[in-house]
Length: 388
Image (tube, rainbow, N blue to C red; front, side, top):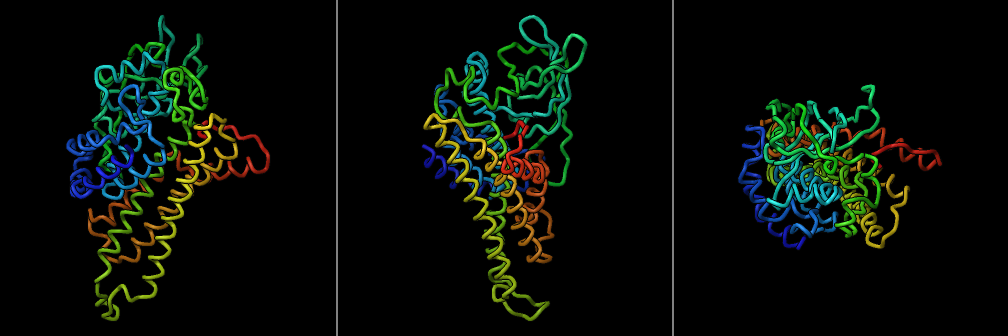
């Protein structure tokens, strides 16, 4: 099924690429693109089989995301995050899953995980209020995963949770006007005193566990993969895809270009250009190979019913942020050597450069922090971090 989805997505790429300018200018993914990706099964690749999902090998999901991102970075970003959100819903209690997918198995979910919200315990659950930023694709979602602090009797935070909130309980504030990833529509979400039943709230500490309420009804290995592995890879896979798409656009644009301002020769005959192409291609390949290896090893551990070794979790984070660095390095090389041609607004090289740099500032792409965690682990020091 995963291969069928990939084949279908490849037939959609030309039109997705054509709509990239519209996504950029309208600051949201075109509705027809969202519907095409739904019909292709992209969003349901990590969804539980109980609701018609594929429960795919996550490495295959990220291969699909890279293809989409090569055509339109914003579309790939939204597809990646929303796909992982549907996996996360599979970790919630069965009652929450039934609420999301019972009436609409194709329901989509956006997120804003920063614990901005305030949860006050009330009978049967919590009362939630808050104002969240950066909820990618929220205009296309009917639910949102939101981070919040649980307030104790004296009004002080006592726990951190992620809660699931239906569209009727929040307002979307249209504020997304940025340099890159403009088409993601990552607007603000505002909640005022909404009731959240207990089954739609999960402690963040539970996300790293290989067992929980969701795994009781979704026993497949996919739901024993750590949250950190899937979520952090979901913010790097689109960037690698953007770099690969930028590379293809670069080769096509520069292959027959003549450098009139220099020596009148074809650009392709310039040795420095040849070296630049080799460097960019190598960075992209390395990013893909390391990412795929790590995700597959984690998934294989889950298939065998084994605990995911701490060393492997740390390596996932090490190579995930390095994948981001490699993607940016490749795009920067191509952007610089394309010369003035890369400056024209909304050409594929320029847009990939903007989108990838925008995606690199996500908290999961904090390179130095992730590399320091790996180093601490290698030296035998304790690593205290939720995204591992």
